[in-house]
Image (cartoon, rainbow, N blue to C red; front, side, top):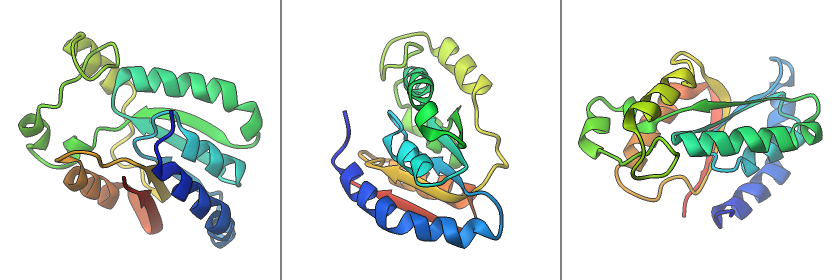
Length: 171
């Protein structure tokens, strides 16, 4: 399933991504972070358009497993690009917001039920390093409920390299 915002994101990537790649060429390979990756469609398109490293992130274990499988299935088509999957929870970027929001999570990757301790263990093992930044951050249909906009804004400010560009499409 692909969210409607992906089609706008795809248009941007097809038209503008080659320019971003060229601009970064003199400063090394282009690294991309996809936030709220879901199945990773936007990140795979960035890889096909010349990114040298794409990091797909989401917050539920089931989504991380799905992304792992997507990477396996698409790795050959993205030859020359390093693809990796990591856990990134935006709510933790705002002190106290994780506890306040109490977003339900299940260890099975669903949004409810499951084993919370298993979820915490998976999240810790696959966590994106705190100090890692990216010159390009992409996201498609990522803010669909409160308090995600505030959390995403804080995450972007922490993860976006200088200089850098974040391109998001919202529902």
